[in-house]
Length: 187
View: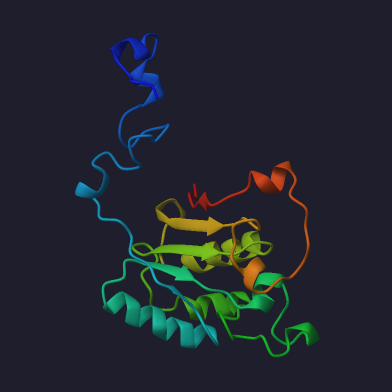
């Protein structure tokens, strides 16, 4: 067992190794005052049935103090199937919300202040499609792209759906092993 002393830090530059709070490399937190100045986002992973049914649940959660949404998508949406596809039979809306179109995405977030609510979407193969639909419905709602907050999860190794409902077999490779949650920052 080693004991660290000031001699252990010879040549170590705290300015480059630690940085300032709220600045790259974010080792001291993502906000300058961390959670003293901005409380953490509280989310509940939710989504079921139709976009309208899930919207009602989201509005209820927001009225109860939740400060962000974490969207649960059904298996057909995760796999890129429309709800009327033969392979989607029996799975539509069962353990997440079914999203087949921009109209569904608009119904999902209807009346929700997307300029103030952080949104997380845990999704893999269809992540870019659903993120694009989300960006498209934010614009008419008056939410600036630069104000978007949240995350898009795209990590088939971490995502629990692969364990509970195996969809495919893939062998880990460097791109897969290094994938992970990407924080949503729209310019």
